[in-house]
Length: 299
Image 1: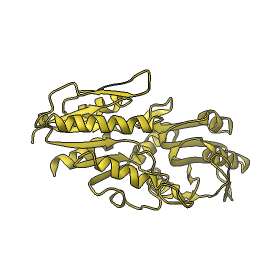
Image 2: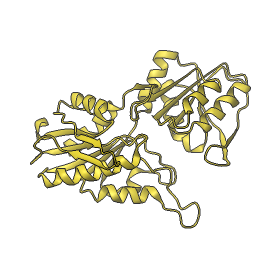
Image 3: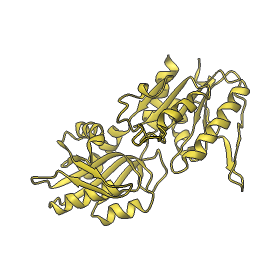
């Protein structure tokens, strides 16, 4: 297989990442034609010849997860019908991963259903970035196809070190964020602490567990959605005389005014990757995605 046998086909919201990945790998780029009709149906067109090619289909759910899943369905089925040799699916931010258990009777275990749906598209492999894995420990516990969970935590930590220094304690706002704090702290060569979180609703969160003198802290998590957990953590740190608080995450969804909530709580700055387009996306997820795709290409 040569590089010219591979095509990067990014969908809506993926043009930036698709272009970067294609440049890193030195493979052709052909963005999907994808748009929404007035009645909210999705239109998808594959713009180039894909017969005999390895098609790398990239869909970016961000704040439009349901549309992105339909886009993936329409694109993958069309790519297959047009004769692609195989389809590799890239989903930088994996939606529905937080509903990984039947917490209450009758609830859908959403990530298992979504993973089965994506596998049904005829993909040979899948790449995602810093997937929310809590009750499932490995991405292979969720997907039966070859699946790669790339990480951008190292890139985020290096950005913080190069732009803000390294005199920070790394803070995980809850036990689920421990893995991200560990990875981040290794790059900064810093200690990390894990706080206790008690969730009382979708946006009502209480954080406990700070003691001792901390001059600077960087709060690290995989996803910021409503920002309630992070904002509460920022407030707690500031009340405990932490002079400077930074916030870093992979997927910056920032719904319900999350960024304002976090900055108003006393955070100096927010840094995210570009898996989701947002004003704080200063670190590219393209290099780890490209590394994962290189592994797939070599196999």
